[in-house]
Length: 309
Ligand SMILES: C[S@@+](CC[C@H](N)C(=O)[O-])C[C@H]1O[C@@H](n2cnc3c(N)ncnc32)[C@H](O)[C@@H]1O
Image (cartoon, helix red, strand yellow):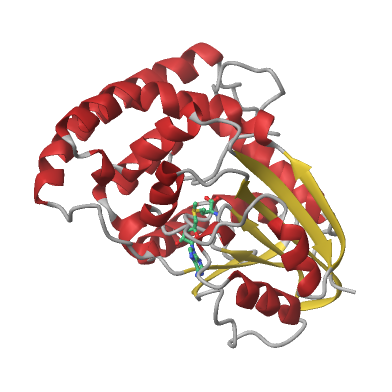
């Protein structure tokens, strides 16, 4: 008999969130103490440093259950709950933009803890997941095994700047979910993607670009190892120069706002406190959440799609 799942109610979503928020505040206060002995936040951390920090580990776990991407909401929606439903909607958006048949082979470049890869696998795609952050890879292996999807999702350590382990034309599709923003050399990464795709293969990138590079934004990007994030309009040229055709862009900024508003509201009080103490630069994610919300409109959340001829 088919198993039926009880729908996640808005109230239980809020209750769960409130519990996590209280734990989060306590943990942030504990992190405050840690911050005094942590590195001074003035440098340029590596991807692994950024995701390995206590703040990132706790923040992503508490707020997003380790799925490290935005949710997709109806335009004009206020409530960000249930967050997981909105995150599945974003994964569905990416899946539908790929437009691939079941059985197609895709590369998840920067798979994190593997939740997007599992969504694609459940849709019938065969996923090669790669990442460079050791604890994300360990998480991904655990959740993929727990969900019995080992046959559909392979997980390996690989840096998307060096994909020489994969032969030309290995994939029907390649996607990034909030990962390409970390690239040190976006041109090289796209040329790797191009080589790995079969003719007719597709890339879909769910990423951010920015129309206004304020000092605070530059600081946030540097502290989260996103210093090469493209300016608004930059993707089209980059993708065309790499040889792709049929470029299309969907602007999803309005549809991710409920989640960023949540980050802004939740982080506002701790952020002001950190600012008073002059240690806000040590809390990259709190700073990013609040400042992005306060400066909403200076950047976009976009879905880019293009095809290898
Ligand atoms: C914001 S997380 C997104 C994770 C996942 N796509 C998701 O939606 O949950 C970005 C991920 O990209 C990975 N990453 C960053 N630079 C990378 C690189 N050069 N090669 C492969 N993965 C990378 C990080 O380790 C991290 O797991």
